[in-house]
Image 1: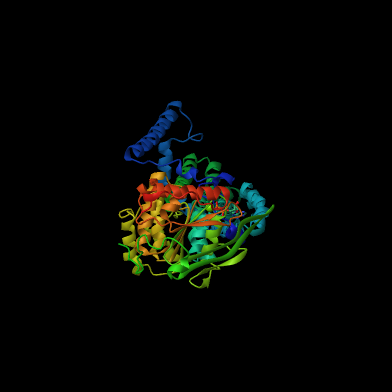
Image 2: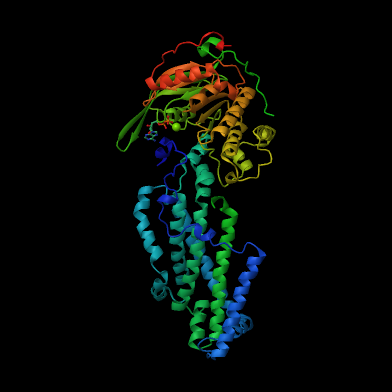
Length: 285
Length: 289
Ligand SMILES: Nc1ncnc2c1ncn2[C@@H]1O[C@H](COP(=O)(O)OP(=O)(O)O)[C@@H](O)[C@H]1O
Ligand SMILES: [Mg+2]
């Protein structure tokens, strides 16, 4: 690998090995940048107006059609439950956030480190990639009942499931980033006498960063889904568990209030990584 | 302005002849270098037994058809690549790895797209763990000289190709290397920008007295810039002929249309086509100054 880099004189103005054209990856940076948020106040007002119209329309429709509350509660009832009963949801929100944060941290760190290492050894990478893909596509929620049998009803099985959902997702995207070796930029750094570590820190890592951020974002959303799913199948606490709890008691306003909280978490994750991408990877767009 | 080194060039003198003749020290020697690339399907013979002596402060152009081994030679001289045989010596030291007294300018400007212009110019200092503060005045002067003042905060993608290449010239000059290697630096620019850049590089060279080794496949660019034009044969690259260019300096774009200039263009083109030098009939009378 190193000697390959030493020998090659990069040809400019031509796609080089490892750039987008050759990559097959699950997701793509454009997913983050193409759907942009409101750029002006006008757009922001329009987005809010759509929400208001939708909620108001739903309220009127449900009232006019006289839909029973156990089928679909009124938006106003959901709103009242969300604010009125937030004290009931808060501890469970805390549980879900904790499992998500711990599982995510473990999975993301392992994913990035593994990607950085494995891409240095193309042969090992070829062997391992199919298994990583297998992990990406397998729903980790399926593991939870098995783990609960062994480890009990505590948070450990859920944390493991979240890590296993996040890690491979982060890794596969980060690996795509690390594979973008730009020989000319590496030669530039070497011409100043850069060490392998300096080349990694100053060239390879920044080059990979946009894809790492994509991996972190998709990983976070996968992690949230897995955390909630794991709480549905094997937990006595957490927002997922509350979904089961409220639906079994036909407390549909509470049920929908939890759904709204989960949706808000998803949107916050997206907005956060959108901002991170703008801040740290805008050179790429 | 750029700090001017003492050995300011005398314009129009010493164009020709063997470099030893004028007593300047030899900055770089290339001794019998050959290069074979090993590939999956066998071996590519890129350079064959090439030798060159480059005195201090010379502007030398290496000219040859695409694929003749110009980049191979230059990358070998920079220490970025190993040669199969022979050696490269800079200021008496064999070049086995990139050296601080050698600076390299690449074909596309090769700026790091995640750094703004100023941060790109700081890049060599970060890698070399060198405090840039003592160089700051010099860097500001260079930025001014190449016309990039006020663009320090711009990202590379906000700059034109010519501006990017100017920035990469500043980046290279910033830490004051003795020898500058340039691999078709203006090859991707349009003809007008290229003329501008050639004038700029001539100016910088006359002010700083750097030793410049400049690779190009453009015959007039080579003649315009060089004290000597080294013509290589098609692959494997060997020395076909060295043309001393004794046109006065500073050279102007208008000079490229003069019969004397065109005479050299013809001789060099003929050398590239046939692989060896045959003098063409001399220009008559007053054409030479
Ligand atoms: N890493 C490499 N592996 C194999 N062949 C190479 C490699 N680099 C260059 N070559 C070959 O060596 C020859 C000289 O290349 P190069 O020095 O880039 O030529 P030039 O710069 O004059 O266009 C070409 O035929 C090229 O295909
Ligand atoms: Mg070349």
